[in-house]
Length: 119
Image (cartoon, rainbow, N blue to C red; front, side):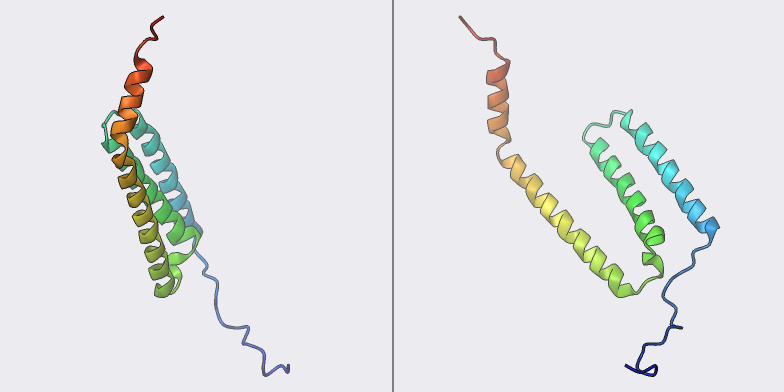
């Protein structure tokens, strides 16, 4: 392999993110962590899980966009990531619908366990 066959070393690949941007993202992650902790103390019923997931998605998006440099990468990589996340959401939703199918059996089992044993 000669020197002319080698790929050019001058092609820019890394993205220099300003320290201010990284500090702002870090501060946002800390703030969202505090919001997560505070939200856990509020009783919202079934919405507690939804709120926690929304906050987690926001935090994960910040990490993906800035710390993993997805914001500065090709659009194709973002599309692949979104498709993968959609498949994960699909699999989780299918698993959740399956758990609803046998809830009546779990309720019946819990009722038998709560009754005191007769001698």
